[in-house]
Image 1 (cartoon, rainbow, N blue to C red):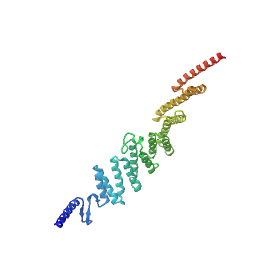
Image 2: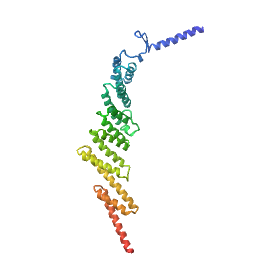
Image 3: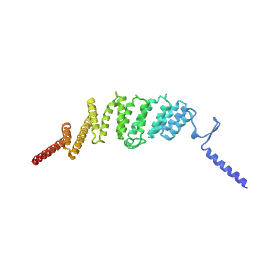
Image 4: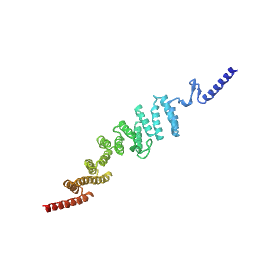
Length: 328
């Protein structure tokens, strides 16, 4: 009796296995074996590529990725492998997985250096870097990459430059690295990157823009140095040079505005130093600083303030002299 029950159980289990397995496995006379359609691949790499592209066209992106990857796995040396890698990257880009797409595009260049897709890949990578910089894709939020802790933007643009050091996107990529660092308030690092634009791509439109950004970066640096006016003065001279060399540039008007702003700051710094000496009762030193403001910063509001303080100091000095004479 027990033996009969055991046989029945075995047949039931076999039946279950057979019904489940035939839902996934198919016998193919060509190969004389069972295959699972889920993992099967077309007879040729061309057929597999076209099959995968159908899913991409229909926006079934996950399925498209699976089918393109099958081609890479089963036909790694085929000419279509480079195309499959390119379409994997394109699929990821359409899924808004921008940094993953960038890495997939780069594999086209690294693994298939003779691919005709090289120029297009470089274009796509530059576009991805620009989109990441605007906060699209992986990082999210307006300028999310710039204010966050993710350095994907730098990696993308550095790779574009490495792929084609003097290509059409190289100078712009170098410039945008500087902008990225400037946005993160890494002003010295940003300055170094803008200098590279001037040194490596002096004859491009980006060199002119980098010259302006150099001055702007120094202007930002000066904001952290209340009593150290050297950085502020450097920034003023850089803006003046920019205006002189580019009088008709759109940025010249902004540069003029920055010059005025920085001169106001420079005059204010001098005024604060003078006021400090005045509070310390070092009136001679205070008067020298106030006089410098009147002489050198007539175009600022601090010139009038300095003139008032000089008159007050002179009146106080006259009063003290008069008192001293009486005591004698």
